[in-house]
Length: 124
Image (cartoon, rainbow, N blue to C red; front, side):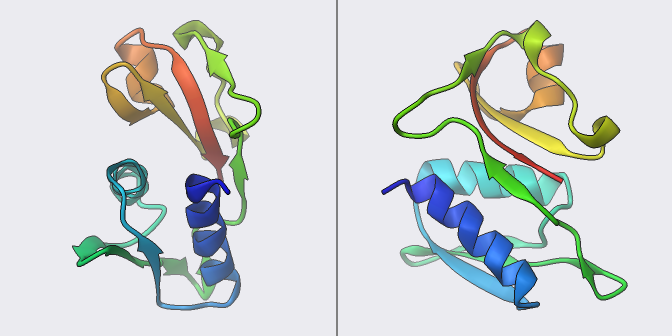
């Protein structure tokens, strides 16, 4: 089982069910991904509560902020790339999350720091 894919699926299903918030089991990696999504305003407030992460979901005019989440690098097939090969999603409206040697960051940060790494997911 892939815990990051489970977290992304829980967020996506929460948006489809129009829930105000969802809970995900805690790990530092998942918290780093959730904080990037919070910073880029794809999800609301992120809080650590005991062994869970509470994620508030954002909606615009009754429509979810996230319509699609796609896991790129999987347990059986890791996808790595250089900074110059990271592409924009949906004309810059989407988000790519990359795990680099300096931590988890979005594609814009990775490009500006000239860092490549493992592509975790894409969302728009």
